[in-house]
Amino acid sequence: MSPLHFSFYSAFTFSSLGLAFHRTHLISALLCLESMMLSLFIPLSIWSVENQTPSFTLVPILMLAFSACEAGTGLAMLVASTRTHGSDHLHNLNLLQC
Image (cartoon, rainbow, N blue to C red):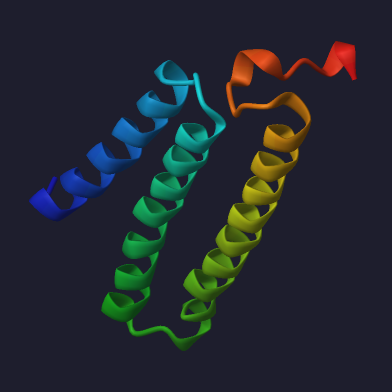
């Protein structure tokens, strides 16, 4: 395994571990999700350039568009939960109480 591949795998692993273990605030969960998307976007864009296939050059752009939509939705949920519950702590959010 090359050092480049190892760095991408470790970035994805660390961001997923951060999402699993540091779930106190909604903003930290959103940042971990964005780092996971970034660690997937960079290898996909490098892979399409290395293989020189024009059909795969659209995949990183689509993934970046979905990531931007996910970030916008997450920030809207953050603002809505902060307005209704007073904080962005995840233990305050319970679907059974809605």
